[in-house]
Image: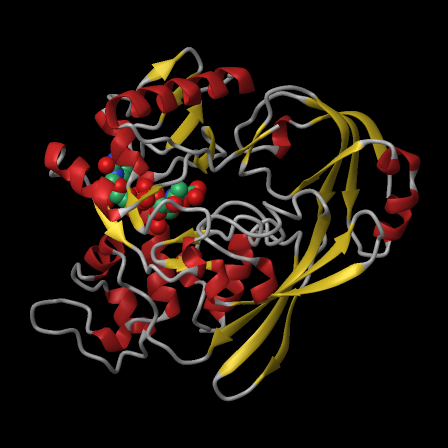
Length: 368
Ligand code: EPU
């Protein structure tokens, strides 16, 4: 374990913002944590735990210590005829874990294919896509308390998961370092293909590859649609990858951090009023149980991408920062943008959405 001074973070954040950290350390094994916790650089400085750097916007140099989680290892802990428990260390790339489960034919996280970032960061914001969230399969989270250096295992219920939220983003923000997670996946299933875009994609004529994957013993229907029986974790994963690639920019080619804003939650009455003025406004009704409602105004989810697009921002560029041309929720760095430039753009978007719709957009990305 080596603590490096004045470290360049450009390659460690997917926005590609050029900033430096006063101290930097890469953690490759759990034992080094003890040493790190007692080091003066750690004890006396502000700390930032970094995974894939895919949900962060640096607006200035970081005057503290950045700890990069590189703890590796994916292991099947136990299994029975129905389910399997998989433990993954936090420094694994999230998509590699998804591929591990898809290769084994296990159901549960195939819809979360190609989400950038690491496993350790996934529970912090309860990553979600195409009708599935991490909390649906998460069993527990292993984390070290920074103050005491003690290890804690948080059961799912203790994580207080919600839409793009967990206790690690709220009450316990900055207090724990996540080292591993355990998932409970199903050996048999039918997957979740309810999300409209995914459903439409899967209903397109089956490709030969799908038929081969099913063992060749299921025949495609005469009109060429994929029969439900040949749906597999692999087929869903492939579909999600194709959809994401067609809409979301690759951070290796153009700096971005996925959705920059969260979708907006409203109560029914407010939605009704909005629909009178904007009957075409897309919205989705989410379950309204008390727990899922914490911190939200209501259970009607309005597409933030649509609001931003309607304000004329989609595809717009200001200096080196811009709004992606295919997904208005995604802000991009065309090259050389500063964090301040991207932050300013996000503030202009928030202001214009507020003045047009009287709705307040919240950032999903963490500002440092
Ligand atoms: N839409 C627009 N304009 C756009 C894009 C979308 O009007 O530019 C509208 C369309 O009506 C579309 C609807 O928004 O039907 C939903 O769009 P999409 O399926 O792309 O999903 P999203 O709500 O915009 C969320 C997540 C994404 C995730 C997708 C798919 C948030 C903040 N974002 O976006 O997550 O991939 O659903 O499940 O919840 C991320 O968090 O980084 C991320 C990419």
